Image (cartoon, helix red, strand yellow):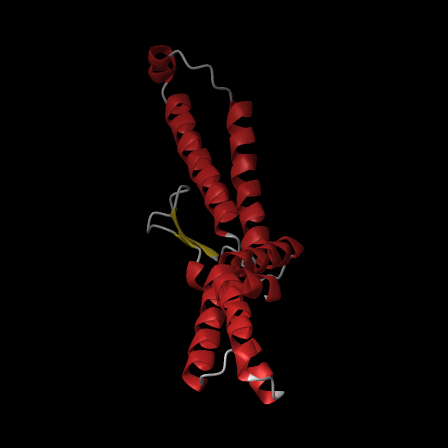
Length: 179
């Protein structure tokens, strides 16, 4: 949810970052956040390695790396652009202030849709539980209860109980369809 900079006392340019997603309330889609955060971290690590290699000529010779100042500028631009991309995804600035974005809203909507899909079976199970407890406790399953209330003779109750058993069997799928 938030990307917060924690700067050290010597104001070093590679200040650490704390990245939290607050998965419990699903403020944004966590996979996108994790991918972006990983990309950001790897960019900063590579930028640091490039700075170390560029700072000492012997390191260039030992590693055989051909890193130019232009390469470092491109990495720095990626580093800064990643922060802005993360802010758009998360909906908060690096300073922690809310910043509503279209990307953030799209990800929240996609997360809500996915959550509904994931929770579909749990909801169907709860509905099945309520139906079974209610009808068994009352002693009137749906079809049999309607038949008794409409005055159907008792010799037909076996057929109504057969249809009630089919409802019990297909109840989870019926509830998923209703949801």
